[in-house]
Image 1 (cartoon, rainbow, N blue to C red):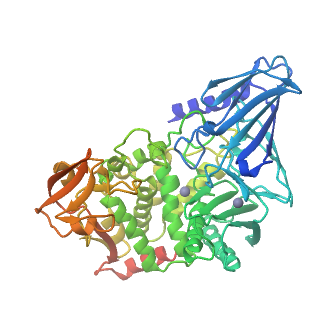
Image 2: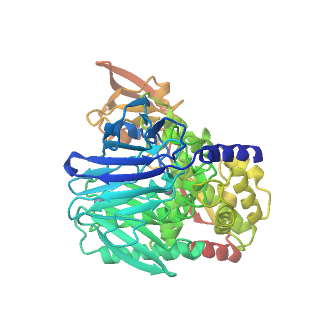
Image 3: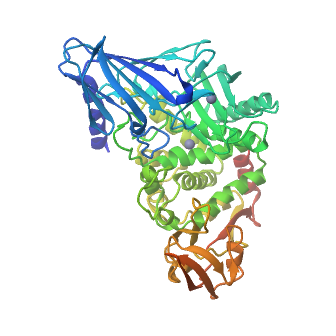
Length: 612
Ligand SMILES: [Zn+2]
Ligand SMILES: [Zn+2]
């Protein structure tokens, strides 16, 4: 590990030490919002003794928090370069790099337009109602100089105001950032009609910025109070945060489509498809806030070693997303409960639902938590040009990570008779790898942890060597030890056949709105054995004409061992096939009271449910 770490540190520091910093200033304008075109200008001044005759402007292939490749370069248009008023020649050297010849000049100005029309924590949107961006999808960096300080000036349209998590005064349009990584960690809203509400907890200021495209129903004051409850629940665990202010940026998109939550150092960007006036939009935004605010510690500051600074020319290979995202998923649900939004029964039902989802997934036997993390570029909202088998082989590091966190939390509570919990693991790791750790790069305080580092912290808190545990449940695919974990707090997991337990391994293509088409088949399923294949359109099951609404019930009139005639349309022909139902595919999992639960177990359970 030392050897590997040393190599990485050298790779990060070498370019920065070799090259004197450039002066780099960004200007962002949006003179025609209806065009969805941001106008970007980057002014670069190189030192007098700079030996390189070119300046390379590069747009990232992806940006943190979403690990699939986004290829922001696709939306760059009208690139140009000049020095003062002289045009400079440039060439495109690869799919993300524009190389400008300095021709002896120290000042180089690059200009381009960026088409953006997605309301998302990864992409940006400019339209007649607002501008909203994260950073990496709009701003190119100067290759080799990502570590240099940068300035930003924004020219908003008349009557539009700018706000982000680093806004310090009203009507601010200029910012200074220590490096490019921080520039693109600062989602920004520019518009005529967003609102801002503030509250304080432990002397720290919290801003709640809301842009509603639909009706708020007068619910904003209550909403801000509920966000404060989330902040109080999470700071009760972590302690007083190091930042002076933090900004929750909400969009209620009212388009029934846009939905996201993205974490940042000083802020979060949360996008709800509905409206604040509706229960779903309101609750969705509060529960997402519980997840994203937890990231202010877990992933943004306490982070896997691979997470920052980044190489924007290729996707990141990160082993620890099951901690970064999965543990945050667990604590998001926990904190929502600790803040009083769910009762204990609902909290246990929420966890049971995740267990059901993961245990019923075919990939649960194939893909480990660590492998899932490494597969992030392919499974994190990634687009695939070729057909994949990911529906059979990939598992969510969010949900598997949530269950690893659940198991560890309860095991530690049981083994230590309630003296310690997963909270202690998180706080100890935050302290060691962030607060007390020297800077490993220009990017941010501290150094990230390796999985081995994290396993050591768990072992220290649990009071036993956890190496084998990690090998089995994190790097391996052994079934999680739910019984041991839950029994410690007087609970148990029950497994029962679902009311409609058979799918025959059929996965319907959700994108085909016209036909009931097989999108995928589970490996070694009844449907596969019966000769069905991807692309078949299901017409009837057991003589009943089927649709999206009734195919499951038509199938579940049969039981294991029954032969079912099925009609499909394939290559413009109608075909009759027979499938024989095997073992049920779907089981329901429930967390229940252990009949023999002792008073001690109940005491530990109460402490867990109360967040103590
Ligand atoms: Zn907006
Ligand atoms: Zn997250």
